[in-house]
Image (tube, rainbow, N blue to C red; front, side, top):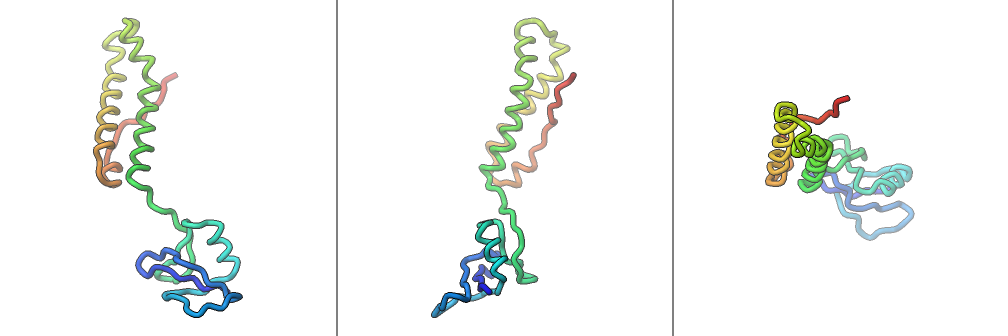
Length: 139
């Protein structure tokens, strides 16, 4: 068996104490797990924690940071803009009428506004509140 020390507020695993090593002091709180569970925790560092209700090891997906969420959403929006660049160029070169380009132009404007809003956000919740129409290439 292996003793697992964890944070009593978050369930974050702080340390492992296998029985085959003699320790003079093992911090609390702790639970005991099998060696298989211990090996799973080691193989998945940061992706396991102690469920504070059942006091067993569970899979855990850490929350994404603000920068990660912003980067993902902005990258998607920039892809939409890149995918419609050819229409903007056709319009600028006179090969597409203003009427034919109007819906794409409105989408592009909304995506740039969304990018600016996302980049100005100070919390993940603010970023997740930003909505925009997805681009689906026609044809």
